[in-house]
Length: 75
Image (cartoon, rainbow, N blue to C red):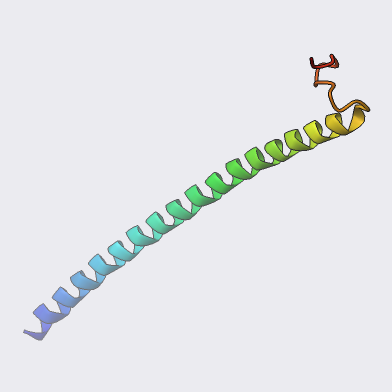
C-alpha cells in the first residue's frame, strides 16, 4: 500500500512539475510580448515627438505667422 502511495505521489509531483514548467513558459512568452509591444510603441512615440518638434521649429522660423508650411501666404 505504501509503495502504491509513493508511486502515485511521484506521478502527481511529475504532473505538477510539468504544469509549473508550462506555466513558466507561458509567463516568459507573455513578458516577451509585453517587451516587444513596449519597444515598438516607444519607437512610434519617439517618431511622433520628433515630428511635433519639427513642426514647432518650422513655425518658429517664419517671421510672418500667416505664412503656411509651404512658404506661401494664406489668404
